[in-house]
Length: 447
Image 1 (spheres, helix red, strand yellow):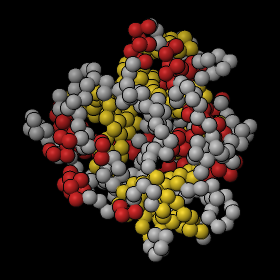
Image 2 (image 1 turned 60 degrees about the vertical axis):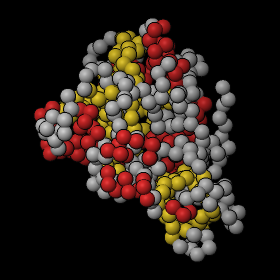
Image 3 (image 1 turned 120 degrees about the vertical axis):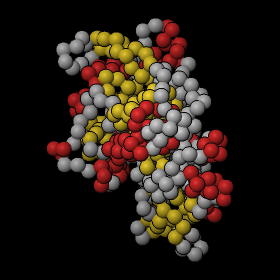
């Protein structure tokens, strides 16, 4: 397997930039005493994590910063070249169950769940009446009849649950004629953590924990955007006087937020630390897996061209403007039946005025000889000839793989063609950038 190499070193200053980016949205701030902690908090602390407030939680942003000034880059490359472990337990895990559960989910999202087989997953969105994105989410069909497992974004848990419960109370099934509240139950799952292990060797870290060759074959052959329920052998710190070595039932979803192969593992809280410790020990003195925080998670998802809710998506942006057309399959485009359908249908038929695009530029600011500054959220796109404002940045970073700044934003569609040169107003300088195809770094999903 070819290793990916880095063409730059993220400096201490750039590490600090990640702290500010991850906490700049006021929705993420909480008083220190009010912050919640995941079941993995003590392990993060033991591993010398630096913490930030995020979505109401005290979350690790990176590890061993005092020892490694390039900590973020090290975690990023750990994921690209081997495997990295992320705590994503702040995400909301939800069950939707009942005889009309599928129809309910299709009534509040543009997803096509009819052809979904057991274990299959869909990326979709909650949309409003204007077609805007309230949140993006993952829906997985479970083996039990009429049961779905849903993962929602951490910052949107409260609003998403309110949205779903309100829909239960007010919307009716076309099939049964009953209010959905009579046939469907929506519950926020408690007592379970979510651990993501991502990278080309993620599969090699999970297989040794499975109990049989049959299980190993099953998990090894699970494709991207599919999930299986299985049992993992873990050994480490547990709560409540439970045995330190145990066989633990988990859900393994082959998906992630890095552009790499990997799994999101739903595990009972009491075994979360033991599972993480077991994964971090795979490989012995040459461990396969290393801990990674929110900082690397952000740079990884940006290289993969993946949206961040509240930044690259919001209630004013539709899935079509966000370039997420692939999440709305033919049947839903034709039949509709979800919030904002008429707006989205019109955009599909007549086109859009703005589009999410990727951009990049060199390591130096043109004409200054100085290192290029990362384009941050809110910076304006400009027409290089007229100076007209033509869009804005929603996410930006310095790519550890490419060695230069990259980012995403929304731009007038006439400027969205690959190769188009635009200006980005960065403080007092107009940075020349080029529209590029995403992902910036090729993805390696197991398909």
